[in-house]
Figure 1: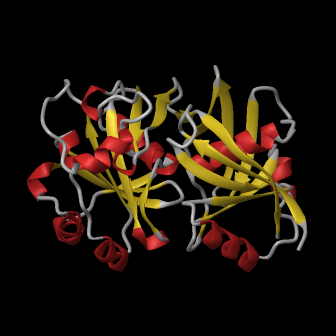
Figure 2: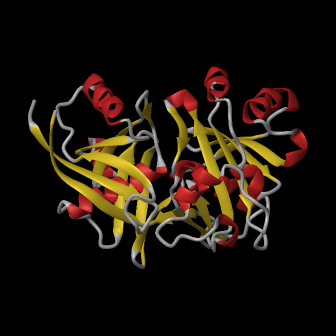
Length: 308
């Protein structure tokens, strides 16, 4: 074992403890796959990352560093909140990018570009593969979620490294009221992202008021008066996370799909984590070349060393 520089950050929030936490080991050199997976399992965070020097191929492509991303149960080729969180941790620890206001991260899907846009960084959403899902394939997923088919406005298989089943449903209330059968979703092997456009402020009551109340502390607004445009929840039991607080890869693929289909404008913001007592905010935009960018704030919470 050796002492390795460590950071824990909160991603997609400007207020600590209201976003999605990420553990970052800033020197993963010499660690085996098993050691990385064991530590990620121990943290029990949705993701833990390990920073490494870029491979020769990555360095030739301009990579500033390489990152490996682990959930408690498996390694991921790409994930959004670890991308932003690792960049923040690397920079705060003194990392110097090759180009000003530009970072290139090497990960399982290849090279991912991050740009500084005002006070926050944003990453370029990786290319998306998407396809329709048949009613027969969708039925057991809807049963596990407790959704009726009439509540689903659109559905797509989304894959930008991680695979998600994306569902656009009728109302924010529908999203917030979900009580999934996580064991059934795990058995199906399906990670599901459920979203709804935010309409005019509603006066309807929200189910499970006690759980909701934790989400509106610290001066946060009620979800129906929230300034964001989309409410999102992410269920990922197959990788050991029943519900993820705020998910960059899912929001990236949802934006690519919903913008292309005309269901969302080319610039909007999404809220996620409401039912977990979080208030994550993700900023999505599409540039003139059609590239979708995913941005968010990051707050440092813990720094020191870890013996690995």
